[in-house]
Image 1 (spheres, rainbow over the protein chains, first blue to last red):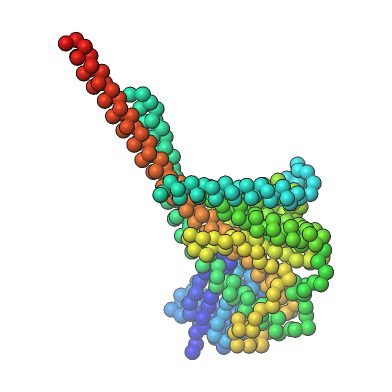
Image 2: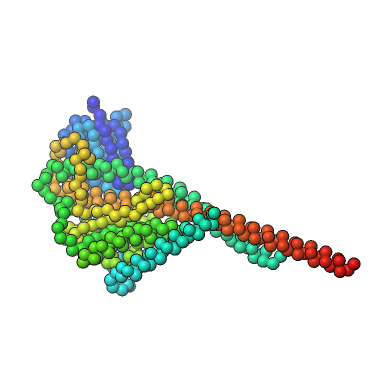
Length: 140
Length: 288
């Protein structure tokens, strides 16, 4: 057997799946070329290009913004990131999410009053149930 | 013809409402199908990443990542709550909030403080209204949620966990059972429950580059983000199916109202004609 199974998947969907003779990926420690019967390897990827030499002789290119590369003797899996990711980008996003929360927080009173909120929710549920009952009666 | 005109206008307006609810029903149905596809699309990634975690855990049993360690004492817990952005989807969000609130109250009774991270407009306004301690939020994720929109909030919670500010992290979201039923579910995200043996492939001895520890860090982070992402996608599917059902019953209701009004209208018309006839006949009789 001189091909290997290549799967490129991301959280938002499958990107590519097929047979290949050679896969070149941007590993953390430098670009790696993976031919069939490569030793099992697990590594992070930098943003870059994954090149797949198809079993049909075609060369396919996929851009990944990082991720994890897993190699088994006849199977390569690229777990591509669905989003641009870098420590600073993550932090910026985190700060953003925090800021939004704090802005909203500025205009409200303290503490959770569980009982009153639960009463409100119960009321909403009761309303929904009443609607359901009315509907059923109307059908009869 | 007393009131006939008014009844006609009423029928017209209900018909217009029915048109809208029907359109919304159809839109929700088609969006639901797409959301379900998206749910399925993220599954291979989820499966794969769980296997990798299993391998990594087995490969270096000495290294214990903070995400995997069970903490004895719980002083503060985190909740990630996923709701819809828009309403008109029946009791979907109400049920979810009820579940969340129940869990929050239980911790509260034990004297445990709570941090909340919310996704979706409805949860944002609910959590702020009840005065929960919201530490991160994002809304307007749309029908096609993207990882980028979630990373911020998730990072806030994971950092809080790493730094020991929270000792547990939960995810609350609606679970898609089928088109007719959705159920609010509460999952524990952190600490991660260990991967069961049967989920693992035959054991490979990997070469790790640059180090197994660093890799585990990265993989776990992605795993958690992915779980939240899946939750969001599933919630969209729930939203759409709940809206479809709600709009379908609204259309049905409108149909019933129209039928009833039509009946009243016909009766009124008939009564008017009868009265007119009676007047003519009695008028003629008086002349004779």
